[in-house]
Image (cartoon, rainbow, N blue to C red):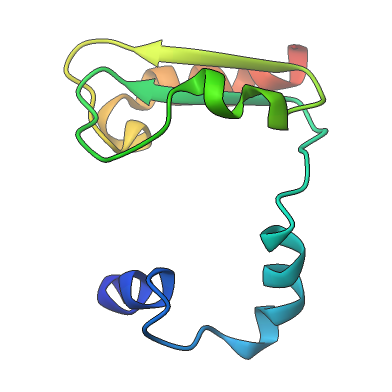
Length: 93
């Protein structure tokens, strides 16, 4: 599954055709109007833009949180309390 996902993201494999309409909409890079909290671990080694680069995509209430303590690319697994707290707090932004 993961290998196919990387191949699809690189344009080397077909995606699920049932999601083609959704993919076309997402390709337009629409703004996000629902309350949102983004998170970044302090040890994330994956290539990623700085939060300021995408903050303007959020037109609703928005916060970004940096998570310290050696947190990498998968905050739900590596920082479950910080992740759960954010999920509970997003509705109160």
